[in-house]
Image (cartoon, rainbow, N blue to C red; front, side, top):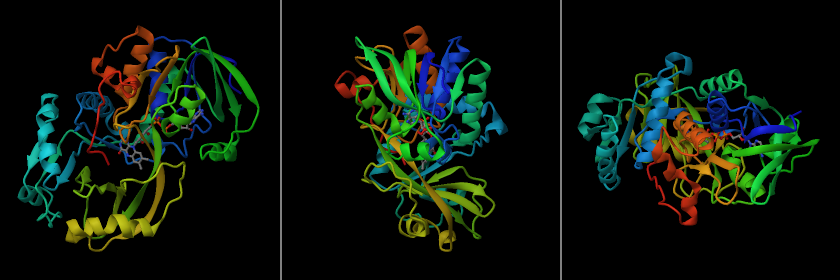
Length: 403
Ligand SMILES: Cc1cc2nc3c(=O)[nH]c(=O)nc-3n(C[C@H](O)[C@H](O)[C@H](O)COP(=O)(O)OP(=O)(O)OC[C@H]3O[C@@H](n4cnc5c(N)ncnc54)[C@H](O)[C@@H]3O)c2cc1C
């Protein structure tokens, strides 16, 4: 059972909440408590993602937070499964010009992104032999892949070592506000089936403890919008199911490469011998708290035709298995990070829009510094991610090339 008093109550123990707890505790904050109905994170995006990390974004703030996180994760090398194999992103005419337009900004920030002609793509990635419809490709050599589970466990271990506590089977079901300030939250104990049902929209039932806290952090990932509703401070974010699958191949070895993003937005990377991971996000899929996976039908409709169009080595592929996780999307496809407008003591870090692994370390540091020092110190550009931008205070931070 969770203690009835916390200094900072962090709601959600995925990569975001675990990293915020780590930074706050390491900065000397007492009483950091993280609550989650399922610390294992079976439904959390942090356990269901593709593990890609890149800093080739169009907004400087997103490049900065990703670049710093990648540098931090790379520093742990094998322990976090970091592989600096690069991101290859193929483009057709139209989007190619837009991609090229942002490379100078990315390279000013040290990313060393290369522009490749279709012929260079063929030469450097010989299995990609159907390039007639391509205008070019970007290759960002310092990006790559990481093991998100290992990253989350590192954040949690450091948080615990610095005094933070994690409460499992604990779901926030109400937030208490007095005179415009958060004063606490109701935390309901749930068992495993209850947690699973609650994360798919059922009411959480169980013994409830009223936890008093000085500060509350919304780090509930795809569930940030319902939590914001409980706070009386709604956010314009939504959770959208995204399917990924494991694909068997005997004809191509992708192990030398990092992430490959086709011009059709299918993405893929080596997973194990004879196996790669592939995903595709159909535009316009409706929001839902749904985790059912379509199986081979998804592979045959969305993945295989796009891959076979790109390479003869993909003519023969085998669907192995797959799963569905939730993307947490904001209206401009950039995260919400900062103080919650109009609610003292309330902070938020969520809606990474497919970027939550690759920004986790730096975004959480930016929030922790704001909470402790009242200002962004290491990453001044993080101010651009304040949720106030959706209330007309600040510029939106639109990102187009996300998968
Ligand atoms: C298929 C897929 C592929 C992706 N690929 C990539 C990628 O390659 N690279 C990348 O950087 N990102 C990727 N992402 C996105 C990334 O996984 C997320 O942005 C990131 O994991 C979000 O972390 P989080 O901690 O904010 O949310 P989560 O990991 O979802 O954690 C939120 C936690 O909040 C808890 N919670 C919810 N409601 C409550 C409540 N009321 N009380 C207490 N706790 C609560 C949940 O149980 C959950 O554990 C992908 C996502 C998906 C779905």
